[in-house]
Length: 311
Image 1 (cartoon, one colour):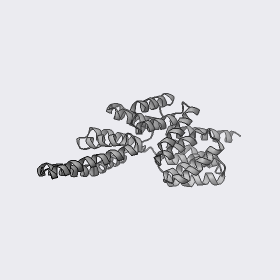
Image 2 (cartoon, rainbow, N blue to C red):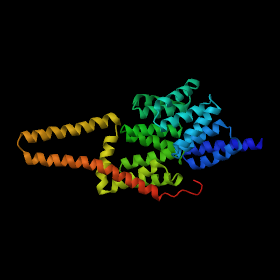
Image 3 (cartoon, rainbow, N blue to C red):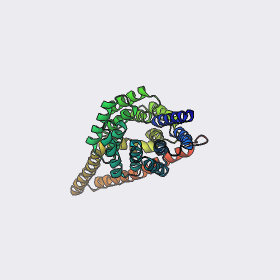
């Protein structure tokens, strides 16, 4: 009985650690649980979620499949498998698992959050908004839901709303990983580079391999760099407001260039036309080279990350 209680306690602690964003500590605890009870479907499923957080998506798939095999009707198992499918970009299959969860329990907040994540990948903004609004009505102080709402607001260019959501999430759970990265990103967008850096460092202290925190730190460096600063501002401009706005903006810029170029050529302003053409070519090359430099910057940061023994 005591062993069972200890196992349950470790499982609860692992769930809490994973929710917080401390995936590696959760993995270690779950290994202990499974060494005592290898047939625990819930432990296998939660381990799958923790492994996903640690970017070990193939190991996560094995654990999710094991959990689903042990308990085919388990909502936790279906939820874990849905996130595994999302990691593999198999959103149709992921949606099937989440629909099963919601058919059993329409008030399942985590399932609604997952439904919103699937909708975001598929650029279904109304569906994403509806799922998050419903989840927020059910659990208004859930930091994961607040962070998801903040990310949606940020993607739509609503910085003040995003800040409010991130601030509320961090008030509920100051160490919530996603909210720390979100707040840092918002502060960077607002021009507060030091504030953004502080949140990135805080997040990296909790999880040195967090790709979002590393990308945030590199974005701050790019913002300060003369060679990448313009590219970062351009990315921030086209990235706010959703995919449709970004597409329209890119098409609009190209059309303006073509119209002006044709006008200059037709008006016999050949020198001005050539300058414009070379400027456009330089812009295209810059937007092709800059992301590569940014990727290299992220890789250098990753090489400097040292995980504690056992990670």
